[in-house]
Image 1 (cartoon, rainbow, N blue to C red):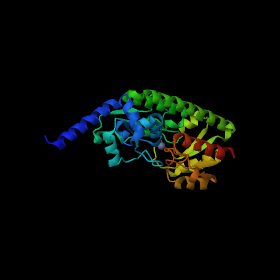
Image 2 (cartoon, helix red, strand yellow):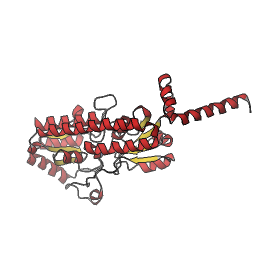
Image 3 (tube, rainbow, N blue to C red):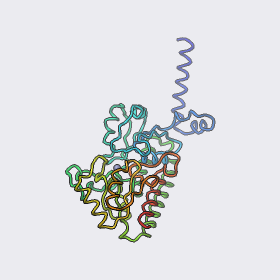
Image 4 (cartoon, rainbow, N blue to C red):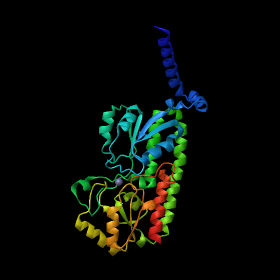
Amino acid sequence: MNHGQRTIIAAAAAAAALVLLGGCGSVEDAAEGSSTTSSGTRLAVVATTAEVADFVRTIGGSDVTVTQMIKPNVDPHDYEPTPADIQAIGKAAIVVKNGVGLEGWLDQTISSAGFKGTVVDSSQGVTLREGGHEEGEGAQEAEAHDPHIWHNPLNAQTMVANIEKSLATADPAHAAAFAGNLKTYTAELDKLDADNEAAFARIPAEQRKLVTNHDAFGYYVDRYKLQFVGSVIPSLDTSAELSAKQLNDLVAKIKATGTKAIFAETSLPPKSAEAIATQAGVKVIGGADALYGDSIGAEGTPQGTYLGAERHNTQVIVTALGG
Ligand SMILES: [Zn+2]
């Protein structure tokens, strides 16, 4: 054994000792002040959707590194994982998913990555809505559950509680920090819910009518007692298209119910919504006012967090319906 080999082995042993000591927190805490390489001791988590990634960042804080697979304003229903995603999953301790069948592409990706860690289904314990609306009685639609669970802040509370539990199990040394973050965030979700309730309470019940781009807002509609009139893509995913008859029916329904607007979504092209709005003689709420149906905003913007995106949605909807 020459000197170089001995040095490498000594360095490896020192690194292993650091990893072991890192579990108690003291080495890591000391390293944080003086070095930028302390990420080596952080829990590596891959999160699928923008919402779930935001939850993991919020609960994990500086004790986890989060790789978010689906970028802001990208449609999660037909997402195609990248080689970088597979690489990140291969190195992760935990993969957190939304669940309820939203990430149909995930199992294949996980097996490609040879991932042996824990997959956390953040939807565990959420009461699911049945899929399929009266517009689409297709056999496959009737079987599905609605995956857009996060649009009810109480469901989001369940999701972050599941995430906190998994982080604490994987990294017990930081369990107290995770629990503290969960407590703070749960209170913020309570406030979001109360503010949403208060905002809709100012709009007469008969004006609370929603036409959206796809069926993303079922849990929101249920929670805040809105009337769901229909959607441009009458489906829980984003692949369906209205038939000519369905299109005419939706236009007729918008007119008959006195619905004021169609809400576009940030992750979907507004074209069909605009065509229907023109026929029905109503406006499309889009552009900067488009709703965050399947995503949250770009990082660093006010809508770049779950809370910011949800507050944007309620503000836009209430303004359009109440005006
Ligand atoms: Zn969706």
